Image (tube, rainbow, N blue to C red; front, top):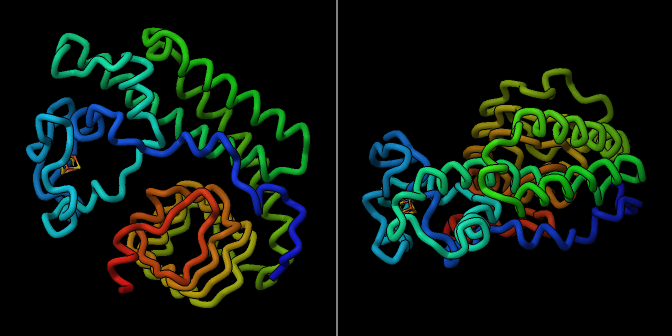
Length: 291
Ligand code: SF4
């Protein structure tokens, strides 16, 4: 394992990412209302988009907050809005809520859906900007962040009219360029040439990858559901959009993994020995499982 990383972002968090965390106390439960969900292992009931969840209280709190998993609402413990909820509630709609102003409801929920995508893009771009050593790539990521910040600070109608797909393509291209650079740097610390099955979008459900040096692996969009990654080193591994549901991360080193998010961690299983990137926190259910 290479411990002397020259990548500045490997050891210090980006300031802007601290605002990209959900602050439910300043949100009018937009995720519990705007989005729909289907009865499944993640949700005990069906809910149509644009309708309040049956567990939502009048003050926008959740009546089963401390027992979501036992009550069949695991999906709620995995979700994270990247700070979009409080932004829409407090900035875009200036503290007006959808109960008091039902005529603004549709616009508010649509703005939340777009804002969540943009906030997630900001999360990844902040990481790309701080981890690249290429000033041009850093500047490119910075420009994209500034463009998104500008859109989020503007009028709701402009936000809803923007070409999110085009922006998404540009963000993705920037993230991939930084990924190639970071992976190349870290791959020298790994198991040598990784098997070809460890590739973007790979079907790796239940795969045994315990105690491996997966440094610099390109696991973008891979299906790692219930994969065994215990004790593995994922320094510089690209995990953008990887499905980590029920993946075992006990003792794994994710501290320098690339493009990891809190929802991915929340869906996985780990323990106190799992090393996390500085901006992410150990999910509550990991704590409960290890006491
Ligand atoms: S169960 Fe609670 S957290 Fe989940 S959607 Fe309903 S109100 Fe929100």
